Image 1: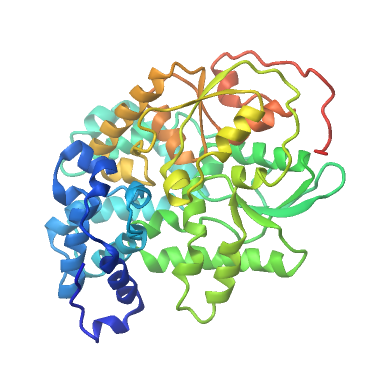
Image 2: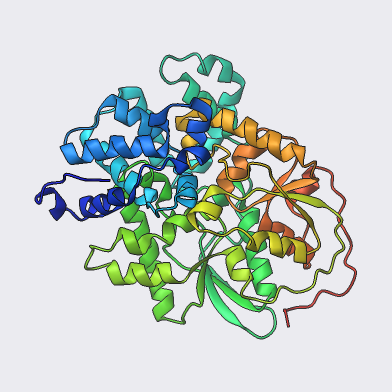
Length: 452
């Protein structure tokens, strides 16, 4: 693709990077075949290729984003399926991130759009605020029909109420700074991300991860000062806020790396993992954080990615269940992790089934299911139908957003992959399965304290 940026424009690091990305696009259109919004809407401007033209025109012109450009960019899920499909290696993620930041700087959204985005940015990254919001949503659920009729805001407020759980789990003993020692001889030492929404909605995910890692001889530390990774606001174009969250985490992890040392930073939410692995790029021009961010990104691992570096112990329960594995977009497209979770589940004794159209997004995409509820609802229905076609006993995934989104559309229980690995190797039955009436499986042999 030919570009026409001026020398003055190319002094900006973000514009330089976007210009390189634009030049790699050859207009082949392969991306349209795997784009969820193009699949649903059939509009070229709602495909990666169409959006690339819009972003090129906007950035080259140096003009404020128009409502049309904003509408089509907002409809992008950042699922990154186009990056998996692209034969030319177009780094669409960095391009659309730049475009969103540019939109945030140059375009004044309607008041109702600004209000919803401000609420999301001021609540979701902060666990205590999020807990209060869930309480408010519980009180508002009976009125969601009336709420849905509020002009301009109704569909989004209704989506918030529908996605909110009926109750918030209690605080987890794992949800605080501290060290969780390895069982037996220590083989490694890792940090684990607590994050923001996940410890409020599903604290059991990290609890299972800590138990599993400890059982395999890994000491787990949750550093003081760590929190939201910044992904939620980053994908809303709010770079200053996202970089603030990221810096706090970088500082917390660097203290551990330079102190007792870390073999890895383990992530149990793949959406967070994709962003944290990109910290090195995000801070490439920051003299104070460039090197530190690169060091952090270099040791970040999804929990299943890290578990494959260990020898998973033999299962101590014979669990005869069929699992439909839903690979989050941030896992398969963002991090290129595809086989590891399924391999681990099979080794743990589960029968694993692939989901038809597994490359197509479920519609969660951070806060997309609130900002674009109609499209998200269509994608969820399509995803659930494909999952149910496999007739599984349960669903496994590696991302809190997907678990929440898909769980709204099916009665099939959905759990985190790490919960099943923990259960099979000696941990408790996942709470979701217990609530669904599944019978626990007794241990078939004494639980080993650590992997060989």
